[in-house]
Image (cartoon, rainbow, N blue to C red; front, side, top):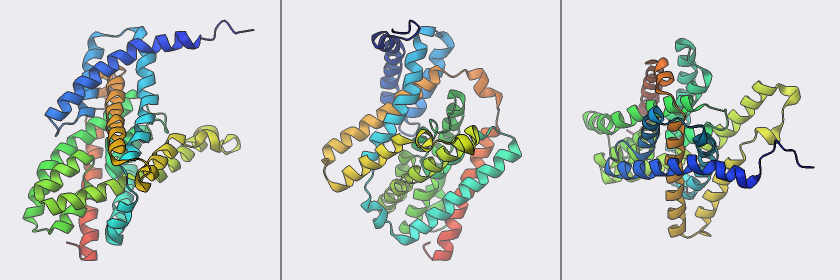
Length: 337
């Protein structure tokens, strides 16, 4: 006999419609604004529009759809972003840049851990800022958030923090590169390992030179692959910490959607999926990230977001400076500058 408290699947999907519809409308608007103002980017517009609408609209009818978008669409977006990755690029960047990447990732995570203790930030926000700084901004936050059960406020804090330093990097990096007399290779590796989001890497790299921009893009996409091991480790750690080793379940802890990311990148690399289809799927994935950010904004209270004040920004600043400095130091010793 059917449990009367269980929801009919049809009713459940109907319950998702209002929230999903509003989410998509805001995502389309954010997508358009992101293309008009690329230095800000569509994901930031998405979360901003969502928070503004949430000030005036707070209907329970929207809750199911927005929560679905902020979790499930976020995971699907990570899978589709795999179609942007080409495993051959890992080999193309050379062993030197991979060494730089290893040091910068380690430095970013250590500084995030230290600042979390100094500033007494909650571990979830600190983890998201650390991962976003170390790997690839919004995409890494999108992949990590479901794994560590991040709340909407945590994601909003980390996205807004990363956004500030994305904008700063576009202006500061090329100017500093010229001031230090860096070559195209040195600057390309520096931008690829120390700037957060792909859009900002492209802007900073190509502002310096075409050669630096191309190398920076390859290094950045290779860095994005670090989503896979980092997400896996965080999933295992979070599950063990939450359930205890005696109740630990590998199948529940494993971030299965990350396997979709790997599978998508392998399909793209092998050529089984045509470049045109890969591009379409990647664009779809990026739109879903914007949709998820809009949904997160709709579930975020600005008052709670402001409660932590400047602490997340200070943490992001320290992590970013350590990351950029480590890249320069390692390149100096490797003779790449």
